[in-house]
Image (cartoon, rainbow, N blue to C red):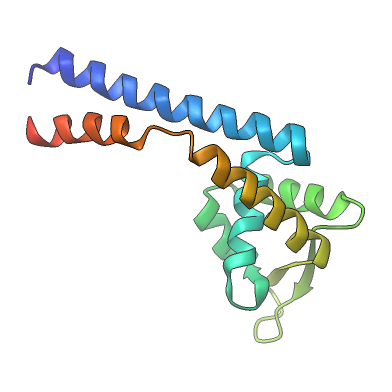
Length: 138
């Protein structure tokens, strides 16, 4: 495969992924007043053992800076009722856990159903074709 074809396929793939993320963000914002990153944070906490996550571990999983994560958690706490709460880690008093509240569990359950319905519209075969061409022609 020629270099310009590879670049064109890469751009097409990234544009498609960006389109999907934009569609998800818009739907989550309209229906639940959540950003995509807020959804990811709630989703990760919901799937964690005990519905809790150390902030520093969550930062790595969701790929946010410390300050961005702090702002995001503040926003999730500001909902009425709050979607998350902070608690000091018993083993390490310097660390904080973020827990999912009952309201947070309800919203992530509803938002996950919406997310899954949106994913049903994604043409993964098209994405596989783009990635397959890149791998086979490399």
